[in-house]
Image (cartoon, rainbow, N blue to C red; front, top):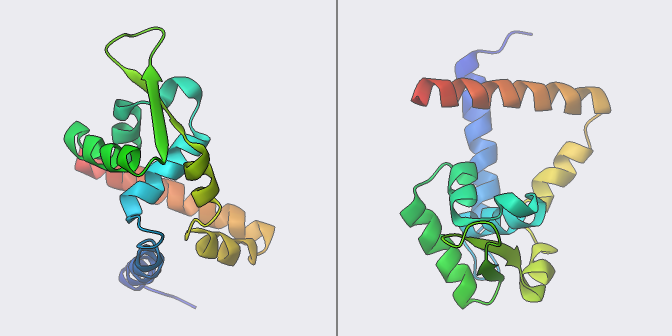
Length: 139
């Protein structure tokens, strides 16, 4: 069975639209859900405004707006960085941690869990290569 790269790209976009459509929930938008996931998974030293901006592929200003809205919603907390007084370390608040349990990306995760371990490994490798290629083209 042969499938065109264009058809595969369309399926990927469709999956992204379906997943993003569910990410407007619990009063959050997709960027805010991404920030919750980032802060839950990132190592302590990387949980900064710039760390999130780099991870999310956005500007410092856009990241600041996202994280500011989350602070106002009491989903994250910040404390001065012990090593760099110009920076703040971010962490999830209890409310943010509780909300993360309702993460809409769990539907996509469940669908991936339903694949065989071989398909999961192939999918992970293929998507990583695609992401790296797109980043390289953008630079």
